[in-house]
Image (cartoon, rainbow, N blue to C red; front, top):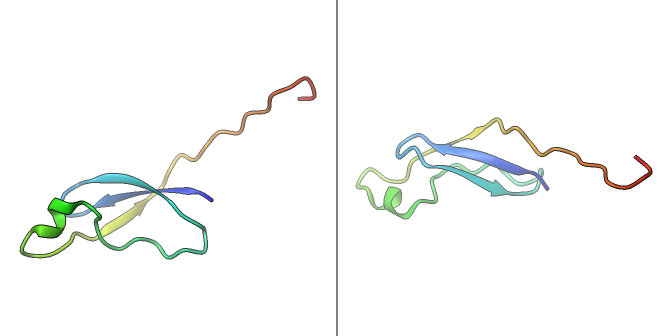
Length: 61
């Protein structure tokens, strides 16, 4: 399962979320302070992540 990077448009929080490719993208900020503001939770945008590197170990590679 991949790790997706998100950023809140309101508070600027950047966070990573480990989720299945079948899961829907997150839409609201999980930060507690962002949720308490009178105008509601901030919307999040999925950012393009760098991904993970692939490392081969052992004598066969």
